[in-house]
Image 1 (cartoon, rainbow, N blue to C red):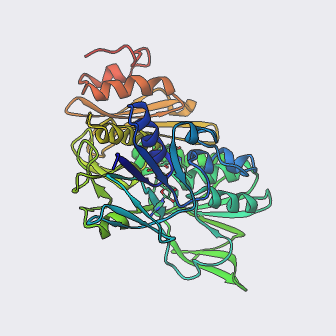
Image 2 (cartoon, rainbow, N blue to C red):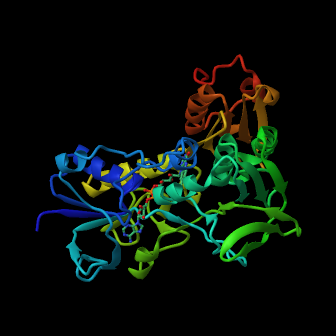
Image 3 (tube, rainbow, N blue to C red):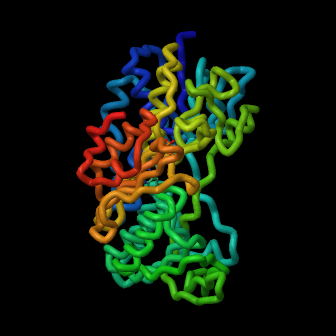
Amino acid sequence: MSQVIAIVGANIAGASAAEGLRNRGFDGRIVLIGDESWRPYERPPLSKDALRSGEAAAPRYLHDETFYDQQKIELRLGSRVEKIDRSRGVLVMNDGDEVAASQVLLCTGTRARKLSVPGADLDGIHYLRTHDDALQLAKRLSPSARVVIIGMGVIGAEVAASAVGLGCSVTAIEPADVLMERAVGRFAGAWLAQEHIRRGTSLRLQTGVGRFIGHAGRLLAVETSRGERIEADVAVIGVGVVPADELARDAGLRVENGIVIDAAGRSSCPEILAAGDVASQCNFFGEQVRMETYTNAYEQAVAAAATMVGEPAGYSGVPYAWSDQFDVNIQIAGRTRQDADMTVRGDPASGGFSVLYQRAGVLEGIVAINRPRDISGGKRLISQRWGGPAEILADTATDLRKLKQ
Ligand SMILES: Cc1cc2nc3c(=O)[nH]c(=O)nc-3n(C[C@H](O)[C@H](O)[C@H](O)COP(=O)(O)OP(=O)(O)OC[C@H]3O[C@@H](n4cnc5c(N)ncnc54)[C@H](O)[C@@H]3O)c2cc1C
C-alpha cells in the first residue's frame, strides 16, 4: 500500500498539516476528515467581526474551494471518526466506512465546556465554538437585546465587546476579580475590566451563576451566586473548553488533559500524532501544556507534517496569542506568572502600554495592549532568554525590536 495519511479534524491544525505535507513533497494519499459541514475556516472572527457585522452567513475559509482538489487532499466533511482500530490500522467512520492509514494525525481540537447549573438548557443560552454557533448567536444579538455573559475569559470578553458594539445591553459575570487572568495576567486583566466598564459593560466580578430562570423553555433571567436577578434575552457561556481526546483515549494513547505528544508531535503510539488544541506538549518553558491558540495549532501541525515525512524538526515555540476587543488589540507572548517581576512600559491611561514579566532578570512574557510593535521584539527577546535590567524595558525610547543581549 502506498503511504496514506489520515488527518482527523478539518480545521486550523488539520488543514495546515495537510498543506504542510504537500509543501514537503509528500505524494501519498491524504484524507482530511471533519465532522463540521464547512471546509476549514478561521475561528477567531467568530467572536469578533462575524458577530459585529451581523452577517455570519459564510465562514472565512482558510483556502478557496479549489485548493483541496488541486493539492489532491481528499476532504471528507460532515464525517465523524468513531474509532481508531490500531490492530487493523483503520479509522472507523460514523457511516461504517473505514479508512486504512499508515499514519494518523489527530487534530480534533476542543469543545466548549458545558455549565451544569439549573436551567442551563433553556432557549436563549448559547456557547460559541463553531461557525454554526456564531450563526445562531448573531441572530439573537439585536440592538435591544439584554445579554448576559457568563465568564470573562478571552471568548466571553470578545463577545461582550462585540455585543456592546452592536448596541446590546450587556452584563458580564466573572468569578475572578480581573478579566482574562490566565491569558494576560492580573495587571492587564484589571485594566481590561475597567475598559469594559468604560465602554458600557455592566460587570459583576467575584460572582458566579446560581441558576438560569425561564418560562415555557425560554430564558428570562440569570440569577447570580450572590442572589442578584439579571433580566436576560440571551446568555453566552464562556467557561473554557475541554479537549476532544476521546478517540485517543479509546485507542489507549497517553492522555492527560489532551493527547500527550513529544517534541516531534508523536503520541505514545509513534504512528499516531496529534497537533493543535487537543495536544499537550512540553513548551518553551519546559512545561507540559495544552495550548488553545491559533498560532500553536498552525505551528504544531506544520511540525507534525515534517515528522510524518521523516524530517522531524521539533517545535517548542514561545507561546503567542492575540485578542481584539472594541478597538483594543491585545497580544501576548511567553508567560505571565504571578511570581515574576512585572514592568509596565508606557502609560496605561493612554490606552497603549505593555507589561513585561521577568524572573531572575530573564524576560519570560509580554502583554502588549495597543502596542503591536512591542510584541515582535518582545517575542524574539523571550526566545533568546534575554536578561537585563527592567529599566531598559520600561523605557519607551528603547525599541524592543533592536534590543540586544
Ligand atoms: C470564537 C473563537 C475565537 C478565537 N479567537 C482567537 C484569537 O483571537 N486568537 C487566537 O490565538 N486563538 C483564537 N481562538 C482559538 C483558535 O481558534 C484555536 O486555537 C484553533 O481553532 C485550534 O485549531 P484546531 O484545528 O486545533 O482545533 P479546532 O479548530 O477545534 O478544530 C477541530 C476540528 O475537529 C473536528 N472533530 C473533532 N472530533 C472529530 C472526529 N471524531 N471526527 C471528525 N472531526 C472531528 C471538530 O468538529 C473541529 O472541526 C479562538 C477560538 C474561538 C472558538
